[in-house]
Length: 192
Image 1: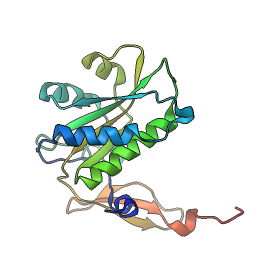
Image 2: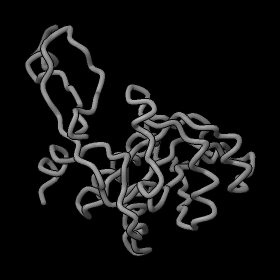
Image 3: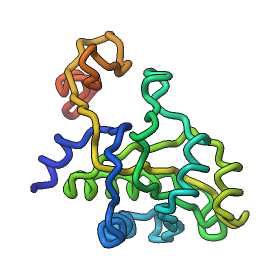
Image 4: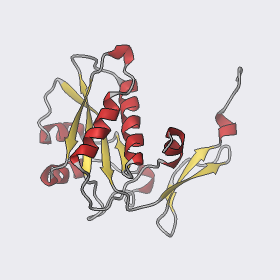
């Protein structure tokens, strides 16, 4: 699969089949993140992969899912993620590596898409609670959590007209629609 095709195909997934992701595949996703650009090549990010059922069950209630779809955006029993990748920030190296986090997370998402795995970036979470559950020291901060699993839902993009709602929604068939601004509305050449 070509990168551009993977980008066009990738959608956020919030409902997952209860199928395990292999350790080698999860390692591949973290390796993709490891190779992302890093400001000044400081490489302050580390990755904590969560596959143990008891830990996943403890973490799940501390995550906020799909604000526009509440409560229907939260996975139900039997739709939970197969794994999580917690992107950790080593505060001693760089306490605010926001660009690094985005680059690493995007590499995970694209590599996962190639493997047929769906992802959901989760920034809204009870980070203190999760840090306690996972025994994360104060030298680290949770930058982002990525929920992963084989998709149990369909998500599609659609162009929106200027000044219309950007709110994603589910139709009566359960298909998740994600409005995106048209290329012509956001692309400028040489001057604004």
